[in-house]
Length: 501
Image 1 (cartoon, rainbow, N blue to C red):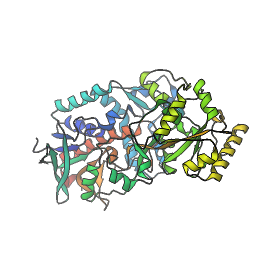
Image 2: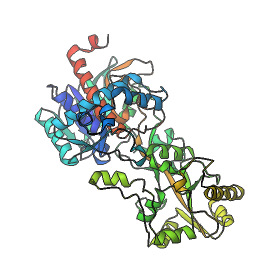
Image 3: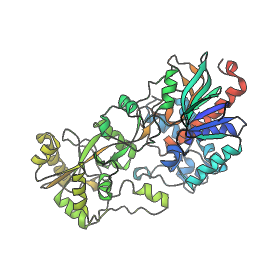
Image 4: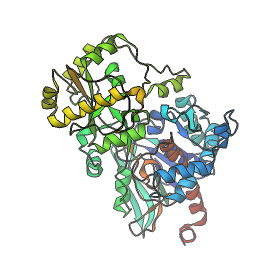
């Protein structure tokens, strides 16, 4: 175990590896801590690629729109999305770094390829998604480069406390094999992925009932780094931002339950109703995962989608010329064409019964009985279904402007089915307040000397939600890590007194 390092990086995901390798490549002595037994984090196990603007692949693309998409275009999209309620200087730095990060990753063993945007609604947008090639081997090559440059990866080693003297970082207390050890250092970069794995912190910062949140995030991300920085006086006012992403049909009794038919049905724009029994959105929002996730969150974290027996019978025997909202995501990985059709579902009757047995679906012979089972206002539900049938008959969604192609399947007679879909998060993206060098800011708006926060531990890139530009959270991880690494080099070479004055 190391006794001393120039920099201790806490967390070996994308942001931590980005910071650690950047530092090691200029000769700094770096300890990279990973509390699990496998490095990579959500940047490897969850993500398939990252956003970049003005990359070599975009500049050499045969598509004019790719070549014409510039830094200022991406910058304007992001700050318009956040309504200027974000750190504009940090946003610009991350975007400016993004193209060089793609090249840097490739130079160090993790190549990417520019692919079609992975969501259906983004096909008219210039391509920004750089998909990993040979992902797991590529991550290992990055770590091999880190080791070859003198870095030390310490797995199953958790940071438990940050030591300071006079407001300056002096060391990190770590725990390995039930033994505690102090690594003396002047710089710490906290990169352990946010707090989505910490039930208590999630409940404290969530605006919905935690029972309605399904997490697909990194379970090891338990907010350790955030908690340690908070003890030092870090500004934690931006913690309550979650990476809302689509909605999921989840069994409350068996979280591992999965049914392919129900999964597909959840990803289609049928009639959706909220806890008041009212329609609340154009359901084809399911083709933009961030916006779909956001609207679900605003409804208390769940809604029901409705089918009737006539519709079920049709789906059992026929293909439907609609696009599964996740199909393009899957096909882009395998370079296969999108079919733009779903079904038929020969086992749909059994699949719905399976969902009913797992307490996320209900069947009733009438609207009255369905309202009773779901504890909904009967008047609201009756009015909603009647109005939806009218909109289908007129082939014009005057209420929410859903594409007329999805105005199908009137619900005129039972039996009826309701399936619950609930909020899904990929992690927390609200974190510690940082400046544009990723330095941790105290509640007094001054940096905590020697402390940096990156990736999902850092606030500033978002206001209230994950933006619709694909791959931004993974790009923020890599680029914030590299930017913090470069700032840490400057700090080490100048010394604290000169750097902070």
